[in-house]
Length: 358
Image 1: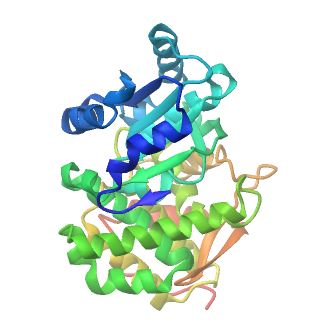
Image 2: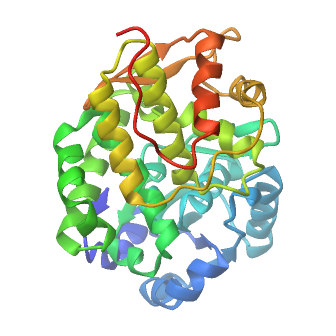
């Protein structure tokens, strides 16, 4: 894992070390390639890479895109000694990772993440996958890349909304295990949002360090790694019921963390004061797309497709305090419906209410 400004120049060395005699195939998207294609091609010119471009919208993160990318690889002459270099955000990384895990029963992979979400989360840990109409990330594989090259230089070209979307994932890391990171965000969030070089480096490096620590201890999500799903049971349902057209992933996670914090207060696990801190930081990032106008029962049905469901019982990752969460928490449907209804009438993050069990 290489992280830091300027590490992109190490990409040719990494590719040569991993596949000294294999062909290199870059998988990216048209919009990423417009900004960075010439630079990537220049860096990899000695390998004469073939380039495959795919749609990087969340709606294209499906098995059809996997099939098309595999067929493009066949036509380009890829074999089992080939190397895929995935240059893009989370959708490109997830699709390219699943393709690498499947093509020829597994070929080498390097991630070059170009968004905040990808750099701090999706490119790290080897989880790959695509969506089905029934739910998010339901088809995939654990397939660790040979290397990750995360250079903040890519973030300079991100549109403001996509940049803000990634900040919600960084907030997640503060809540689940890094109180100092959360405190830094409370004090310096405006600097991060201005893309101040030092502030951004601090939060990205701490987030990456935490993700790497968790996945190194639990590679296949059988225990500790579940803490990374804080807010995601709600988020995946929001994305699914809106057909992946309303929220960027980080925005759905922002709402998911608000809902999870409110549920934790309802369950008597989290103090209203700690909930207030979580909600306020999320609100300061910027306005979230509104909660969808759908019945709570429809969201609960969507949550039933979540990978963390066990024997039909929904299980949540809920905060106990800033820096600590509890996994596998079940909630009564009545409580869950109340939380979802409260979110549905909110125009945005609101001041928290007192616990009904405190």
